[in-house]
Image 1 (cartoon, chains in turn red, purple):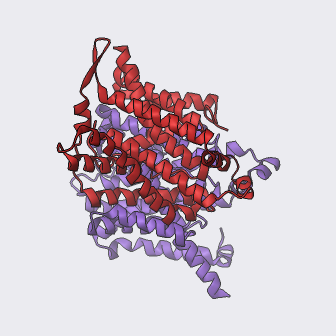
Image 2 (image 1 turned 30 degrees about the vertical axis):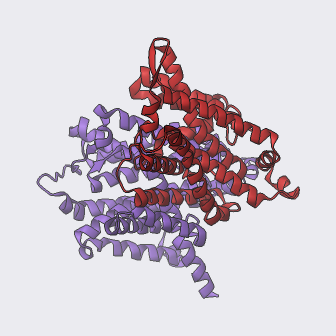
Image 3 (image 1 turned 90 degrees about the vertical axis):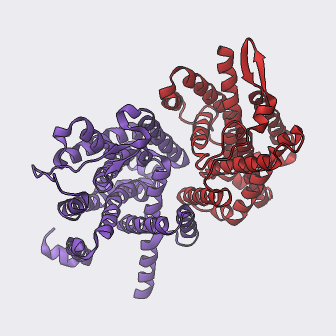
Amino acid sequence: MWIIYILNGLYFAALLFFISLGLNIILGVMGILNLAHGSLYAFGAFIAAWIIIALGTHVPPFFLYISLLSGLVGVGIVGFLMEKSLIRFMYKRTLEYQLLLTFGALMLLEDVIKMIWGGQAYYASAPFVLLGKVNIGGNVYPAYFLFVMFIAFIAGLLIWLFMSKTKLGIMLRAISLDREMATALGLNITGLSTLAFVLGAGLAGLAGALVVPTTPALLGFGHEPLILAFIVVVVGGLGSLKGALVGSLLVGFTRSIGIAVFPEIELPLLFLIAGIILVAKPEGLFGR
Amino acid sequence: MDFKKVSKHPRWIVYALFFIGLLFVPRILSIHDLMLFEYGMTFAIVGLGFNLLLGYTGLLSFGHGAYFAAGAYTVAMIGKYFPQAYSLEILIPSALFFSMVLSLIFGFVCVRHTKIFFSILALSLSMLLFALLFKLYHITGGSDGLRVPLPTLFGMSFKGIRRPEFLSGTYYYFLLGMFSVSFLIMKGIVSSPFGKALQAIRDNEVRAELIGIRVRRYRLYAFVISGMFVGLGGALWTFVNGHVTADLSHWVFSGEIVYMTLLGGFGIFEGPIIGAMIFTYLKLYAMGNTQYWMFVVGGTLIVLVLLLPNGVAGAFASLWSKLKR
């Protein structure tokens, strides 16, 4: 039975990793906490569900899995529009305005989702059902969850390579380390900030797309994951990519065990652990 | 404040005139509008308290819904479990007490940080309360919430009276009294040496520390005071609304508190009061006229952030100073 808890923990962690990584990239590079991040996640879920339903059973299953990428691309575009029209006016403003603007964006996005897809739930379980179940140590486990973990592993590897090996990634890291110095060195801050926001938004959208085969897309879909991602970010350290990974694993496992052992106080338990870590290490595990 | 001093301060004459005007509001407004006005008034108390932290101490909390919920649930829980103690003169002090305890605990953790970290921590802690209120449904009613009956006041019972009559009669004047007292106390706090110390911390933390202000402790005091005001607003709100749910502690509700404070203008003492009134009407108007009310309210917020950063009151103040020149 314990193997299932561990796998579930890894699965939760994989999803959270996408969301909190995106949140952390935006926070690190732009210094803006994106309160609308949960809505971007929901947006990804709706786009993917909509496309999977539209494709239906007429296409080979392979295309269904490719269509999950629509969350990444679609929300990337939404993020691009959002950055160009709203966020870029906020770089020089104070914290209050930055947070309130993304709060306003959250309200807008929630209703845009409602305008496009209406109030009903979208069920798109085909990718989940098609993969069937596998037998792990005498326990039946959905293969789709393993698929999500695999994707998260690949994506994490790619992001790590991008951030540490490519020139673009190094420039992004330079901005998050010292924005003024990076400007002085002549980096194109405007363009790189747009890139960071698009990347962060796209990752949230991908998470939404990956989760939608397992649970129907509903209004207010992004509220809970956002809070969990906040806990990850606080525990792991603001703007730290390593922190996002370790924090996601911590929160993922706590949730998995919490749901199995103390279902009533699973979320409070999470806060308790986060609280203990913060009292011991106020800047988070990998914070600066 | 004696009369000579008052006459030197035209501001206090305006306040007095406003107060007299407010006494006649129930005669002018229909019951529906009066209820809205009372919602606005409870949020005005919330805004006053919230602004001590945001406008005067420079800390932006995205979790003040928790203290609102603390006040509101104190009332609802006493109503459910100790109906014999269900009278306003017991309820209001208990609401103040429990919101103080909660803001002391949460504040202790939060004030160790500033800026964005403070905001996220305050937000996360309010979600902890949300999770508890939501999950422990056999105690708190969960997502169904709890019903709030009409209270008694100094032995006066309102049995047989319907809620609208209660709200347009005794309760309006009770609320007005609480609002006026809150207003005066907050005015006293911000102009006291303590208030000035908070503003010094807001403007320059290091300098404040160097002149001997105990920064973290003062921040905690400000946090607790603001939490108590918000809790008072929450307690008074329940009687108007008649029902409490866990959503009061959700961070989106806290966001609305921040919104109304900014809408009025947090640089000005009276700003949040104006913001609370406008927000209440704006939200209801949007909800009544379109199913996409969040689009309207969120869009307004974005326009406000981009074009009117000092809020409605701030805009009028700068217009006024331009006209005077």
